[in-house]
Length: 258
Image 1 (spheres, rainbow, N blue to C red):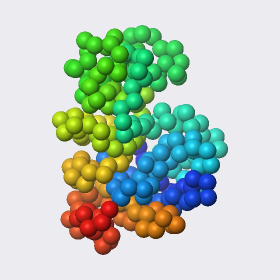
Image 2 (image 1 turned 60 degrees about the vertical axis):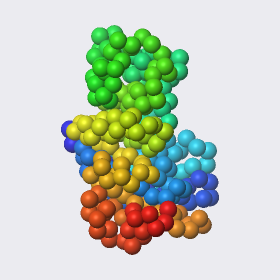
Image 3 (image 1 turned 120 degrees about the horizontal axis):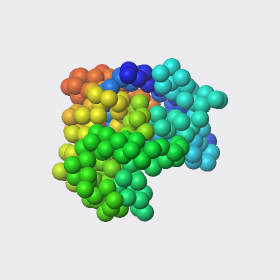
């Protein structure tokens, strides 16, 4: 299935503080899009807007729209819970449910949606764990606590938990920043394999990681703290990292600021 995902003139606020201004981009289906930029430029806020987590903060609001297959996820008749099933999220630090087993962690979202036969849950769990590159490591430990896995395994477990809902888009907020190099490589390998079946948007501070795994890159910048962040440049990753159009992009990528 080809999924269209478009950010349409999106602006976001925390109370009176405007964080994002007029962000617009069309994300290619079955691709990896990296969001880069200095700390505090609104990358994570943009990501959280993409599945309506931003509005969970008191006083937070948005204007503009985000279209998934042509449907605005902020429309009055749009259910945020349904949105978050279609647009999954993996956070910076692994957050498996500590009292649940590996199996229970993976199928937690499915159980919230209703009653499913055990055989179906087992099938979906195995499929998700295979997609997250974790099945061979945990297939004999499904009844153990998910919190007993290593950090890298826990993060892939969280990816599997999101994938079990069969989302169209997967958002990842610096998913490897708290991991060692080997675990980071495993996460990157997983991302590269997943893009054949799901559209991925990933926030990263690691320029080398963005260059390695993304098809397109968005560079965001908040030049002055009394002004909102803007999308400086968005396009093909290889072109942006070799011949950026904006001097601010070049300065950031080459390490001259940020």
